[in-house]
Picture (spheres, rainbow, N blue to C red):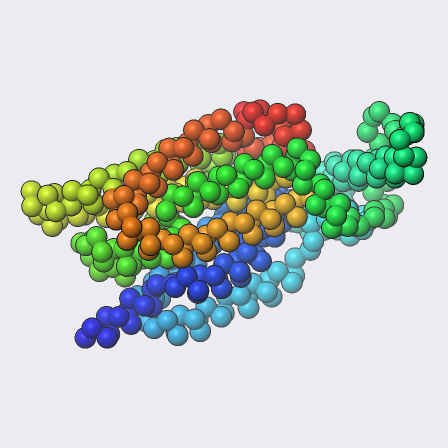
Length: 413
């Protein structure tokens, strides 16, 4: 009997080593997928469609928890092979983003891709939007060529003054039917691009928001929630409790999809972070006085404790978890977007793996009350940071979002 119980628990629990493997696979997918969605969407639909893609992640997590509660981990692994194979076939049928194709000088392919993405329409139906994309791509390339000319002139003439002719206005929009050939940026140029304010400032915002998300304790909690539920004596089977938590993630993302267009990402993030901090502290207080509460109200009072975890999951999934990833798809300028998004995703998964490795040690050192008191304190600091520095990007074009960080990172509204 104990052996069977151990197998059941193990089926729904990831070890840190397994999580590292999963993080590597997820890291290769998350940043490119969200960047792709951000580039192909219209501003009014970007937030909804990005949250829609995140919904599938939560649905996958729910399915894993559900399967882990009814079958062995080997069967779960075998069933899971179907999904990446299907995703590979589907992704092979979609075109590259028009902006990426324009950056490679493939103007005709970019126009075809935009027509395909807007529902197999004719070029005349997307002429105005395509003209804006060409102008945005041309402006990005124009700045790069100007900076390169200045650098080359300064390196050849040393300390002598040189005059570089540079038009003061934006260059004319090229004919969309003319193929452009833009030089490929070297790795050194990409690394130097990270120091531009419009890249460096949003990188700091996203990495800091991810830090507060990881500091909320929720990502590590998802890895060890069966163990934690057994430890704090939730009033139901720990495996099925994990299924309830994973279903709450789906509901949280669904609410995000419905609310993001009206509330905006900034307001959603603030509401979410405040609630996360509050319920982290509520869990710490309840667990600290759990014995006294059970003596006074009986073991059924632990339903309140379990409800705190459900509400915590809902609020994390509603804002604090997905908002940084939504911002990652739109907050960076086109030149450097993929590189910067990849760095942010890589740092997130590295930090997530480190936290997963130390989560049980933190619980053993501080106890559940002390750990969740720490998580709640981190959440309150995150609320202050988000209020001061998190911008509102909902409904804005990618060019307008880029302009936010060219001058001041405090222009958040």
